[in-house]
Image (cartoon, rainbow, N blue to C red; front, side, top):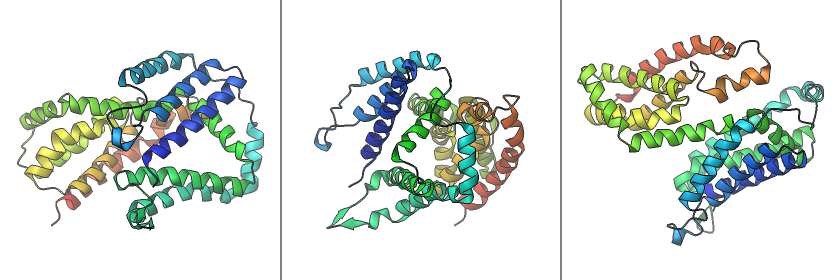
Length: 322
């Protein structure tokens, strides 16, 4: 059975490979950063299902690892990487043209197929995918299939996947971890009662008997918290616990699945507005060598605003349909 643990181990192997390539080029801070992160991914899961109370790495050691990452992050300076020049990559892109889209399309396609039908795939009575983490496991499998497809399309050596992956990872640097950290931050906020505090404030500020008012408060709250914290993963548990669950689902009977899907998408409208979403809005500026660090936000905020209005309308129309 494929489980999320296999995806973690595969990701850890890639991080160790990236660390080794950096170590060979005497990029010590990069090598140490990816090696520590690889250890956290490889050793953070239970050894056996029967002993889930015991992890390979104690929580305290994992916390020390996170602190080490924080110390190493400012030392990760972007520098010249020697794999392939920009001119070589551009020449390959012109030669391959639209065929380069095939590996990229395979990622959402295979993920969707596993999410929708993975529970029906079995060999000898044993399911191929863990039902509790089917979408994430499908995403990991899709990435592996897309890598194989990319190697076939480009006729590159398997080592090219590691080399180009390391190049992109080093270009992103510590910003690659922002979604993970912000999601953890959202969990901390939810566990410490921030959602309850927000619910109390909302009840004082809006007429909670109005479903429209609650939808607007939920949507705008998702946008605001996403803009502050940089990612909808951090905002979602807080706003859903404070507004979505008690007011929209329990009080007004909204459909949880529709509300959750559109609520997360609405939060990502806030991602388009904020420099706090560095991996989305600031890193691309560096990659594209744009003259102003806010050029990406300037180009997309109107789309985000229009999508916000559409999402609020869809949330009210679809989540309360009987």
